[in-house]
Length: 97
Image (tube, rainbow, N blue to C red):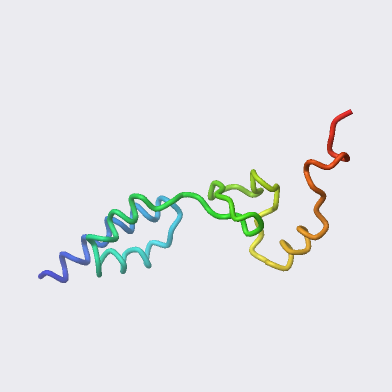
């Protein structure tokens, strides 16, 4: 009976985390096993992601970092290639005339 209640209570943090873009099944297991920790964790879980280049926070649905203008790609070789050829945003070439 207690296990059945734990399975049902595990849905609460899982649904909250799923609305924030997290994986439902992982959070359901987490909520079932340690509900008392998973519930506040899901409530205060960040909806931000970190830029792989400058390590600053950006919105989860952003395609470009607002700080360093790096594109968010899943392929790390593409990110490293772009960062090597990127011109500084404060260089003289970027000033309007």
